[in-house]
Image (cartoon, rainbow, N blue to C red; front, side):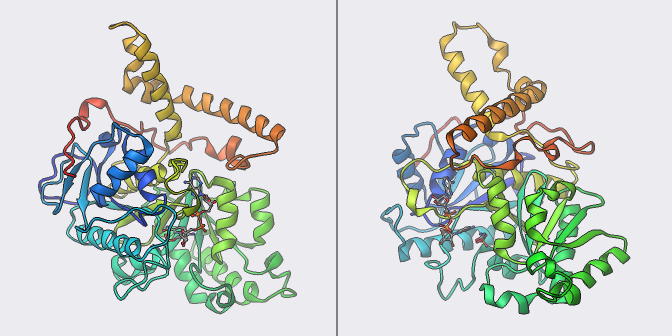
Amino acid sequence: MKDIKNRKSDKPRIGITIGDYNGIGPEVIVKVLQDKRITNICTPVVYGSGRILTKYKRILGIEEFTYHQYNNNSYLHDQKINVVNCWTEVQELEPGKITDEAGKCAYLSIARASEDLNTNTIDAVVTAPINKANIQSEDFKHAGHTEYYQENHADGGDTLMTLCAGDLRVGVVTGHIPLKDVSAAITKEVVTSKLKVLINSLKKDFGITKPKVAVMGLNPHAGEDGLLGDEEINVIGPVVKEFKKRGNLVFGPFPADGFFGTMAFKNYDGVLCMYHDQGLIPFKLHAFESGVNYTAGLTIVRTSPDHGTAYNIAGKGVADETSFREALMQAVDIVKVRDGEITNMIRPNAKQLLQDRKDQIKVQKTLKPGEGEEEFDLSELEAGERKEAQVTKQQKMLENKAKNQQQGGGRFDRRPNQNKEHWKPRKNHQDRPPFPNKSEGAPTEEKNND
Ligand SMILES: NC(=O)C1=CN([C@@H]2O[C@H](COP(=O)(O)OP(=O)(O)OC[C@H]3O[C@@H](n4cnc5c(N)ncnc54)[C@H](O)[C@@H]3O)[C@@H](O)[C@H]2O)C=CC1
Ligand SMILES: NCC(=O)COP(=O)(O)O
């Protein structure tokens, strides 16, 4: 971890940018941070506004969530949730509306977190979703976060938008550009550079010593031997060959439809797609609920949930926070893998564990003092019962799958990953509880100044 002045713990400090406050960003932030155990795994530092978070607390009817607000961050508290106020004006919340003010504030939040990344005040950043249009200004002229971080935190190197869920990691050679420009952007230099970023990140950030990577073609049927396009023959194929020659486990180019349709990605540590929707559509079909967007290649660690502002549901309290929680967990994991503190990342579904904990608390309330105490030993839940939680999770998934098939499906019900083999831990994965022992401390005190 970075050498942070005044750090009073060995937990990573994770910055969280608030995104567009009229989208679902603040809601998923509050929903995730309200779990007190979060401060056992990291020190969250939200860049935004305490007032906005308090308003969302009220909308959501959440009482428990407490945090410390600062106008500057010289006294970040390593046992509490910190909120750094990035603007002083009182902003009107208009959930679901695209406003210039929300765009400006989204930028202020990102800029402040960037300063803190540069001064080593935080170890990583998790970005809540922005609206790519209203954030545009003299200060922010980027198609999205990925491009902003590439310009500001890559030390001149290349980066790769990479969507991650469990062992599935999908990078895209071309990101936020019009489809009509994709073919011209697929050059040997660009594909080579992106493939290098993917392989290096799989090693450095995910702890995979010898990563196996699949590369997709650009055209239907990977060009069908030149009949349907020649990028595979002239560009992608030769790059794959070159990497193989140098001893890398790189394969392809594969026709993307069949590759994803047959879940051939189970056999690879990473997949390189040629354009945004080629990778993101199958990825989101597979793991929209829990997917994480990771910018590989940066000098710092930046993750985000895989969804956008979701204006259509903003302020209604129905946003699913799983993806944001996973983004936070993945940022912690990557900081630790980069540090050599853990060798690889595998943990049970975080939401399941939190649900287990909530269920336990419900049971606890019905018990007499002293009764059933051992049931609330977190370390037992986290370490000893993890396998059981996995089994229960699999059973639940099977039941849900059967139910969904009968009912004709719902929003997150078509994920084919539910019983996939590759979700089983690999041998070299470090079995690590997601939440350390509660004795490390959790916030008890509220100090909201508004
Ligand atoms: N990293 C970022 O900052 C990203 C920003 N965006 C931006 O977000 C805006 C909206 O983009 P869309 O394409 O509409 O994608 P979106 O992800 O915001 O919404 C797509 C659909 O998924 C639903 N949805 C999304 N997240 C959900 C959640 N957590 N729980 C329940 N339902 C959820 C929405 O209600 C909507 O029906 C755009 O301005 C886009 O540029 C989009 C993706 C990433
Ligand atoms: N759909 C992915 C996406 O839009 C990522 O945006 P950003 O993280 O670059 O802002």
